[in-house]
Amino acid sequence: MNGQLKTILLTVLTLSVFTLALVELSGVSSTALFNKYGIGEGGADHSHQLSESEKDKREKQMKAMPKTWITFDDTKHDFGTITEGEKVIHSYHFKNTGEHPLLISNAVASCGCTVPSYPKEPIPPGAEGNIEVEFNSTNRVGQQRKNVLIYSNAQEEAMSIGFVVEVKAK
Image (cartoon, rainbow, N blue to C red; front, side):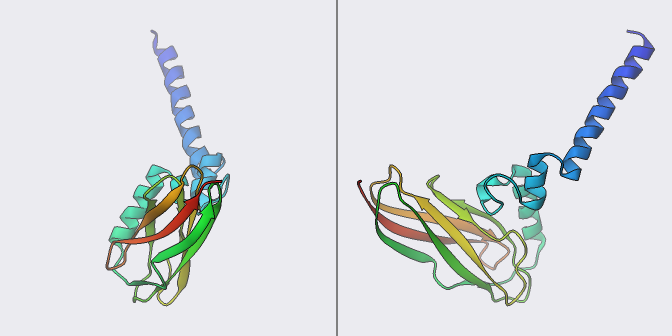
């Protein structure tokens, strides 16, 4: 291969990589827009829609922050009895009762039928927020107990919130 062809191929490769980086950083692609600004299909509040790199970034930020306190109004909820196929949502209200900003890095459900959403921005001291948990009862007949682990820079790094529900057949 002659030197001129190598130079052309290297230039094309470099420009391609540069273009991809520029697209991602500028937010032109739907993935970049979704990760950077939380817009796009499905909304930004669902933790399962964050990319792995965003989750890693949030976890590193959280671990670098000083510890604070989080206080929930309730950590367990009873939905009672619902019919199979129904979707129910409960909002767990909390307050940052510490002296430093609170950052929730992730919320992980014990099952794919349960989808948590949480604030992505740091919660200032004294401020309040909500973590919503949606349960889809499709193919879940019987008593269900589900938990969501909340990871944050609170004194207790992983906290559990959850619910119980009785799902009756259609």
